[in-house]
Image (cartoon, rainbow, N blue to C red; front, side, top):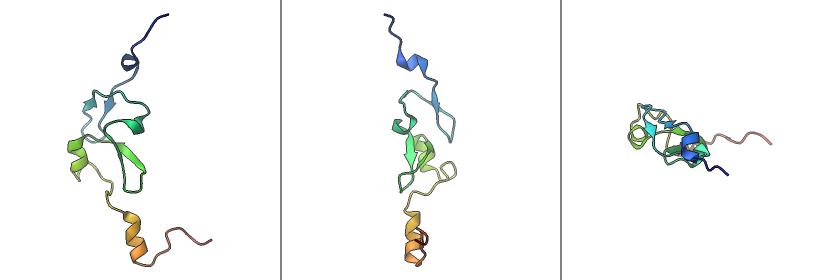
Length: 80
């Protein structure tokens, strides 16, 4: 039986902001150290810490964007 190195079989994971590659080979990608999600838990991409803190490189909102609609009386869930 031949053992293979799992990390050698995986392509490097680049940051979506600066394209720097990560040394982490975590799969699925949503479990990666740089994996980012918005306030509501929707996956937004893989961003290193520097790009995540830079609003020019991380274009997604980090706050509860549904809260704006709720405070203004809008129905975000639609008619039932």
